[in-house]
Every structure is written in structure tokens, then in C-alpha cells.
Amino acid sequence: MWRKVLTCALQNHPWRTIAFRRSSTSVSSAVDSMILRSLKDHYLEVSKMAPPPKVDPPSEFSVVKGALDNNGPVLRRSYGDNEEIRVSVMRLANIIPDGAEADGGGDGEDDDINQLFLHVEVSKAEEKESLHFLCGLYPDALGIHSVSMRPKLEPLESNVVTSSYSGPVFEDLDERMRDAFHGYIDERGVNDSLFPFLQAWLYVKDHRKLMHWFKSVGTFINDNRSPIWTPISEYVTQINASSVPALGFNYSSALQTIC
Image (cartoon, rainbow, N blue to C red; front, side):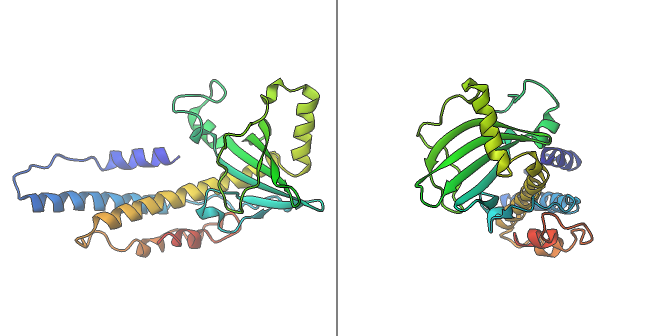
């Protein structure tokens, strides 16, 4: 999605060769102005993109506070008397090397959107280790890739793969055992019902990261305070305030936190 936006934006603002007959200072100023004007145009274009419809996670899950600005767990829930389940998510395309296909074919753009990678941690209060599931999540299915035991994670700690044993190849397990593990996490609410929320979550997070990139690069370059680069916070107000809030919080407010 973002690749399309950037491609179109760059095509609409082609770079032109600058004749270096002027002083180095004036050339530098011209280059800076060109970059700042392009960044501002791109920022405004992206800021006007409509957010996804309001999506709430399944009722038994809650959003981890601060998760939008971290790479750790996104959702959490309690299960039974002493279990806690935490779910982290990223796009499968961010894990698979460029040019590789997760399923050997299909539309690359759609695959990027509809294939998510989940890390599920099931922990118990009295245990030092927790049960970890690495899963592929799709609009209508969830598949387990591996099951392992690892040290417990801190509340906002990212799920860094350690050198400890990651368990047997899941597909090599007996079919009844594979089915039992799928039943285990499904009973705890980890299934394709999470897909709509997590897909919208990644959309909002990617949007925030892209707008923050435009803002931070422009602010760094604008050391001469060019009038072309007015404070980005003034442009946040141009976001469509009438859009339906996404993910249970105000979308415009979420974007303003980057300024």
C-alpha cells in the first residue's frame, strides 16, 4: 500500500538536474527547498488517506498500553486462574526475503496485506518459562509454524528469537498432536477472529511511521527555516476529522502524537 503511495508521489514530482553554475550555498538551498516541497506534498497526500473503519478486538482481549509505539505485544488477555496470553503481530512480508513467496504464488500486493505473522506467548504466574507459538494468520485461517518453551518476556519486550531450542518441525508432529495444539490456542481465543483488528492495527501503525518519517526528515533538513516547511502540526488538522475512528481510539489524535 505504502509502496504505491510513494511511487505515485515520486512520479508526480520528478527530480530535475540542477545546473551547478550558482554558488554552492544557493544550490544547496535550492536542493533543500525541492526536498522540503516534495516532503510536504507527500505528507499532505498521505494525511488525507481515509483510515480503516472502526475495528475492536474480540471482547476477551484488551490492547496493551503503549503498544502502538513499541514492537512488543499488541493484545493480551487472562485465561483461567493463572494464565496470561499476549499476542504480537507483524506482516509476513517483513520476514520473508524480498522476491520470496510464502505460498509459492499469488498476488504479491494482496499477500502482503492478507498474511500476518503472530507470536503468541502463554505464561503462568508460577512458571519461569512460557509456551510460545509462531503462527501465520490469514482472513479465514490460522496455522502454527512452531511451538517452543522460552523465558518469560517483559510487558513491552519484543519477541526476539533466542538461540534456545525452538521445538521440532511442526509439520513433522503427529496429526493428532498438531490438531490438539491448534485446539489449545483456539480455546484461548487465538484464531482468525483476530485478523480484522490486527490488520487495521498494522495499517494505523504503518501510517503513523510513514508520517513521522516525512516530519522528521523535513525537520532535519529545514535548518534554515525555509517558509516552504511550515510546522507539520499545522497540517495534521487537515486529516479528515469526520473519518470513523479506528481501533477504538481517535485516529486524528493518534496521528497528532507524532508531532
